[in-house]
Image (cartoon, rainbow over all chains, first blue to last red; front, side, top):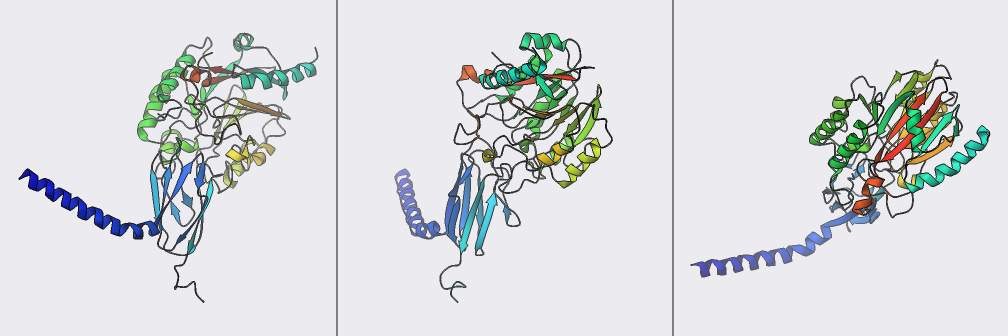
Length: 119
Length: 310
């Protein structure tokens, strides 16, 4: 019985891994990360396609925020806290830390091929 | 020795002492700084006159490696206050009371600071306005009788005190910010006051430009100071940078206090202004409190920075 159960577990895990693998390439293209460390955003300028979800992670010992006026505003991110935003429209999104405004960054969102990008 | 000679001397002494992290004493007579001596003399001078204390950047809730127990070092700072030979008239706190603006952090800060049994006049730091409503918690707790984001003024022993808020509505790429509404209020607040009345301005971020690369300055600070130029004695007390720094410009003297929580690096000496990790046995030499004394009639002011240790 317990052997059967373990076998089932392996099968389930295998299927899950397969699904995850199959899903990975899509996920990788749609999400990307910005690191907040040493009071700066890295990369400072990020280029992504429309529909991408960007996740900021604060690696400093001091809280930071990610604020793009009229677009998005994170709460204060303590150490290792994250904030995500999905960019659904093309454009350049400048943002900064509202606590340490000398920290600035930008996300440049490009239209996907075959859409409005072609005249 | 003439006053002028002493003034020059003081500057040299000051430069050395500030960076050595020891207690620093200096006085201002009519805007011209002169050297009084070291701490023992200062304590003696404290006997007569009016003294208040400055504490800053207690960051209650901070528990990272630079100081895993910021609450404990605040308790030590308050113990120092209680042990002072001369009871100060009151205390000012130049912001970053809490680390993350949590009610429990404000509660702990209140519980510890109130043990000094002194009136405390607060201004917020950026760490005190992190709640969902960007400062509502702070204003409910500390903002009684204040205007706007929490600015106010009061008189004590003939000195006019002005608490300013320069941590609200900061602009991308910029520094600390006072804003038009507060500047207008300030101009009006000092209008009609005698130029001989000593002025003390306190705010979290330095009102002068210490190091713009790290955001250590106030965008419209010069505008605020322009309203104070006609006064014979203006003292500007700030926090934020977690280290003692001083500057004299005409009749205006600037001073930043130590934190009670953790030190920050000297400008440009590290990749970022983040908390500076020092050896455990050195931590308390980098933390501390400041006391400020006015000697009536002479209009002299003395600031003594006392570390928790050393």
